[in-house]
Length: 386
Image (cartoon, rainbow, N blue to C red; front, side):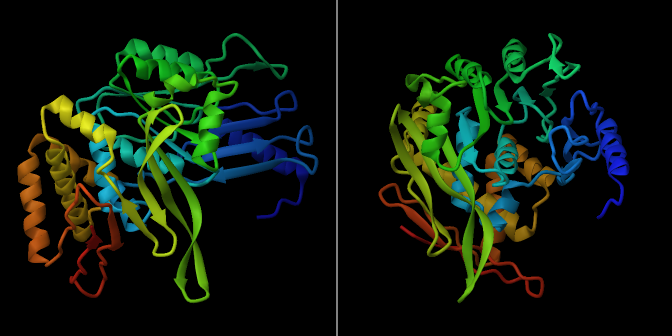
């Protein structure tokens, strides 16, 4: 796409901004907005801030979000890790996804948000609305900036203001699209009062994520860090396709639970040599906390995770990948878990697909995932090491 005239490109950028309901001009030459088709627009006007002339970038999003089954299919996570996250989110635990630009943080956040029970009240807070949930009791809030002659005035609504407002909605879960400023402190305060919280943060490693959270302008006290129960790190990595051929893929490289300030428990790690996940649930303090709160043994929670792993593998075998279809089965499981599990287990047994058992004593390494070909209905069994 080539523009022969700078004036025409300026007009085009202005038209894009107006389509998104935003204003762009010499007085305020940058815009970050959402187009009507839900695609994200970033643009500059004239030569005020972009030396070579006006620029624009459109990040296209799918009409429906990625489901957890699609992420398992793409090996971003595996079914056991997905079942663990399902259990954590189901019981109101908090989680933060860290990663670099374009790593897939928002897609992963949206996918695990589908695990929230259908009757829960959810408030999402974003600069640009990207999250998409099937829940009926969902309030979607976005920030607003007002400018006069290039300067911000008092009618601006910041993420900080929206997070404070969300507490008056009595939410079960507060989801902040990305924390980068003082709104992080309010989010952690809300988690201290018993609200569930999900968010993302730009950071290349988990160590940098912690340092960003504890430094200005977020200023989270180290003692508050354990309020964020689980940290996930997602990044773009090189995976081997065949000898001498590599491909760029997205993987959750590490999942850690926060026990206390500077004390983290590794639950899962991606192995780049085998492109598989090593999952150890035996040290999970939050699964044990869930068991205690429900009056169950730890083995009972592991048994539930096994059942959820079976259901996720069954959906993958059946080709159920649409986000709304997946969430429908998840909601059905909350209503009648035994019925959904027996149906999934029965069909997997008919297809001769075996789900690995979880050992409390040893980590589970999922070496092979279910392979589904278009030519045959046969599947290869998922194998695991205990």
